[in-house]
Length: 118
Image (cartoon, rainbow, N blue to C red):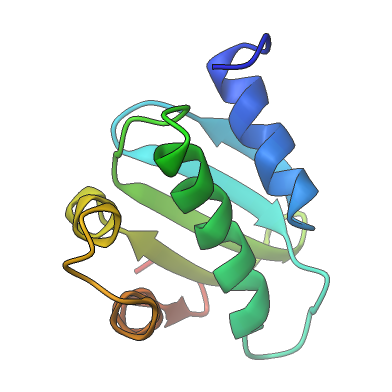
């Protein structure tokens, strides 16, 4: 683990992947809210992928104990564009090479709910 508090380390990793973090709570499940750089009608899949990658990298580096991540994507304050989920079991399966990039991506995209609260 680096010298930052766990939540700060997660936030730093997300920001390093271009995610504009509004809030992150490391409860179980992890709650992430971020402001999208792509405020169109549909969420940007690349941006979702970068957020997922941050959690995968942290887990691989033993800086994040796999927990389910529930993310909310905002266009602006109070304007929810979408929500998505990254399940703890998917992170573990990915780390164990039981799940490849494509299948993990598809699972996250299948969890995507446009328009806010699912």
